[in-house]
Image 1: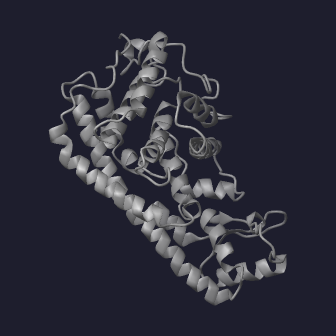
Image 2: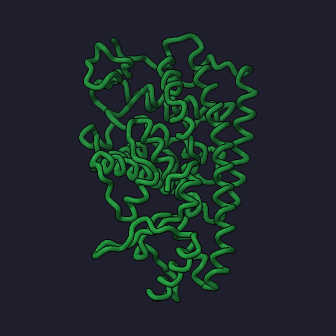
Image 3: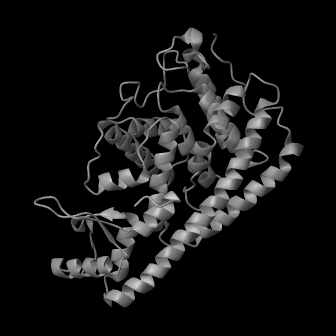
Length: 371
């Protein structure tokens, strides 16, 4: 097989007329989601579990098996039984770190290829794939196929490494260009990045990190917080098939764009529903925790629990004075535990500390009862 030769952007054969209904639906759904996002004063706190869930699902598309619950348990101090799960969790945590790094970097300067390299370096830091050109664009030929298969059995051979930089420069220029519709532009940005496949490992995850970054930079989201991997993981076969068909089938680019716009529309509506449910849960619990504790620390405590729904008491930090004493904090947690708001996940034993969990929030984020 020969290396793939991508089209130079912008594309000249986009069937805009057929896309108009989908563009309208996706833009409306995204605007509704951003309205919810904009109305949350502490979205970093309330939507933190959803950010972790996005990292879980995006990594799962690439083959990891760890769940949201396992990641949160690990961060609370409980080691997984299987070594493979621990490796999965570190990959997921790196994904979340990379996403956060991108958000902070964009506050100082526009998106660029150097930022892509920084994100990739964080993504593969000390995990599987760390020896595959971590933080560097590839200089050798790669290919996609069954594990261990030679290039002759490849399902897709990305562009020649000598041309990667040239294609990336064109891609970066298109990323920043003003196009007729930014959602169609994002569909093309993502697919072209996956076609170029500029890294030896981590291309899919980097490509999905681009979603919230791009939407925020194009002023479609007030914060770079958008979670598309749930839809892509659920429709994984079609997702991959649509991408692989580009350049091999007639009208494949338009079919990919239609799939992507549908994904954006449906996922934006799901994200809106889940974000509203989290906000409603927070408001309900805020009233209840204040009534139960009559404490000035009720809301700061609840905020920390939402940000970290599996935790040990020593993980709770109150930066502003006055701070609760250890006895006061223990009393607050005991009250929340006895009322059923918190659940004991691991009992204290010897030097092992107790782990508590806000079960209702975790199950809400997973969409099913896992705790």
